[in-house]
Structure formats: C-alpha cells, structure tokens
Amino acid sequence: MGKVKGVKEKLQFPLYDAFFVPPDPLKKLKDFMTDPRMIRFFVDVQNKTRLETNLQASGVLPSLNTFEARAMRVVGAPPITFTFDPKEPKTTTVSPDVFLANLIYNSVTTLLVGEKTMIEVPTFYFPSGAGVSPGNGTVTNHGEPDPMATFRFAEPVSIDPQQNFRVEMLFPQGVPDSVKYAPGPLRIWVVLDGYLTRDAQ
Image (cartoon, rainbow, N blue to C red; front, side, top):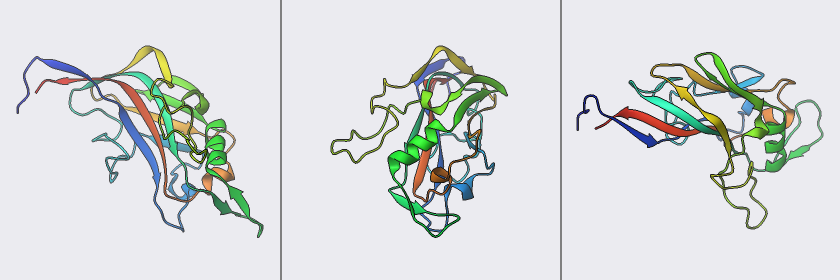
C-alpha cells in the first residue's frame, strides 16, 4: 500500500534501544563499552535484533517522521548471580539486585536531541515500569512492573525529522566493578514512550 500524500497519522509507538552483552563466558560488559565511562543508546543499532532495538538507522527517525517523547524509562535484565575478582584470588559474589542497584545509583542518564540536553538526572529517576512481578522474591526489577510507574516529561520532548538524538548513561566516578565485570546474557534498555507521526498508508 502506498503513502497518502498530505495525510499524517499519529500513533503511540515507543522507541527503544538496548546495550547487549551476549552469553560468552569470556566477554563482560566492559568489553562492549566503546567509552570506559559511558553507555550510549540509539547510536549503534546495526546488527541488533528486534529485541534490542526498533530503530532502522542510528540516532534518527525513519523518513520524515516526527516523535513526541512523553516518558523515558531504563529497563535492566541483569545477569544471574555471578562471581568475579579482577585483582585478587578471593571470590566476590554479585546478585542481580546488587548489579541493578550499582547501575542506577552510580550513573547519570541524559537525553540529547540535536546535541541539546533535554534532561540530565541520576538514572534512578527513570524506573522501568516493566518486568515480571516478583511472586517468589527471586525477580529483580528497577521499580514497580507497572507501565504508569515511569518518569513522565512535564512537556513533550519533540524530535524532528532527520534530527539526531541519543541517550547517554554516564558513570561520573567510573563503572563499579559489580557492573563492568558482569557477564552475559545482559541487556539494558532505554525506552522513549510517546507518539510517532508519519505518513498515512
């Protein structure tokens, strides 16, 4: 079906992108960080599955689409309990809840649109509003698993056609060992909830 000229449609269409560490015993989160103090989202979308991103091109909307971001969330699927010791022969155990706590309390997340900072606050401001309800106490979530339990912008953040945008998760004091030595499988998503405007079809 072809496009209808001059007619637009507006639909709820979250944008998401994930930082992914595959299940390789020799690979850790630190091995996939191009910047040792920062994780970037919506920048590198090539060779990712639909589970990791729904963008077609890095940092821009497809075609002449526009987007109104109404909420932002950070969702973590941490690894199971793991052990590490980068310096000494002793064993250190890290559980999923410790991993998530160190991730969100030691980082600052920034939304940039056209190189302009739209919001910059500690990551704990962006609860996931997603995940499995911990019926037996074994599931770790960043916040309540309720889509309404997320950070909402007071005013929508607009992303214009072909305008660059990205999200950065910065660790001002460095990535804690309990995070950077985490093995896969591991995914950290950033989700922008909002409305996409596109040509009607």
